[in-house]
Length: 520
Image (cartoon, rainbow, N blue to C red):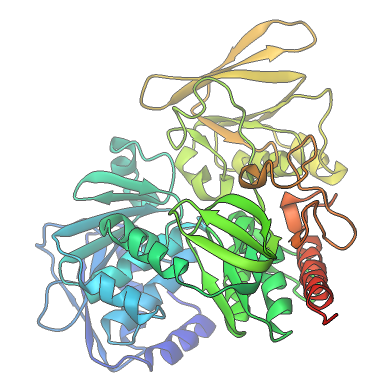
């Protein structure tokens, strides 16, 4: 089942098992069950601490297997074959059930252990989803640490009928005790916070009590992470606060144009960024959304957060990035995650054999259409302008696909559905002015990004696109406030450009500090 190299890696990982574990399989005669049996056999032969047995009469999904301790009946369950992006989730589940400690701070793990149940989680994932492993791993960790929590990670392709019955149109999709709990990327602390209502207040209290920073970075993408590293290397008190560490990179599939890194994936790049930041003396505060920037008073800039917490700093670097641009048409929000989606890599497999539309004719839109053409029955790409804007090589590939139709001069005006899921969309043919209907079951929106700058509006100068106006040094219109990355007027929204902006902003902030604090 596993290639020799991957099996050798697995054996090395399983040397970290501290206690024996047992894999309890419930299988049938299907191909997926045979693959599961081969996978479990490979795991068994990779460590003397692993045993495997089958429980054919168990009332659970088939194929599935439980990772537990001998003599126990709780643990982590996988339904389907967890390969692809989820192989790491499988390895971590084996280690955590086997006593190897999760890499989270002790306070968070104590909060997991204190949760009361029963809490029965089910997560539907796809093997091509780059957002799913974070959710699967978080819930697996909870299940391994707390017997009141159970988790089954379900590979949607192996349980297509179940996915259709539950109308899962976006992954990861998490159910708690049979009810939809959430969709999209979630980290362990975020899940715990939703289950423990007092955790947000405790975190806000901790933030309010922090001393004044020399440099406070708001944003955790390439720009923010680079800023924090450069500032910390100067030996000054540095804080980084972000809604999610990695930012927009977490939604990026392959990265092949970052110098010295021939190929990586967005989630891997983001994880490497966080590890690098934490090697320095940076106070990292994730899962916090900024609400207001207050101009400097007595030489200090204040940042207020949605939790009510306030942080103070002698300089602030805004690196809050950007988010997906929406169409802002009727039906878009109503059917979000019910057919309207922004990630072809994550959700594409859920639309296999179905007609879909892609909105946007730039590189991202054309790449999405090419990707989806291998899954969907038909792909219609709608572009507002008179011609596609994607690179010529991508357009040639797109035009070679027999199940793709390109419509230019098309303005989407409405997403339609039956109340539960998308059934079509309406667009206006701009040359003629006629309104036309298109029957589709999925709408993939790929029309660019909007800067996350609402929270600085009124405090900093913005251009007509909502971007923060900066000079060559990253300075904004407010003294002591700098900005970097996709939220600024920097013309090219690229990872390497954002990282460079972050370095400039950090050095400029340090220069500001030494010049404004020099003795008379």
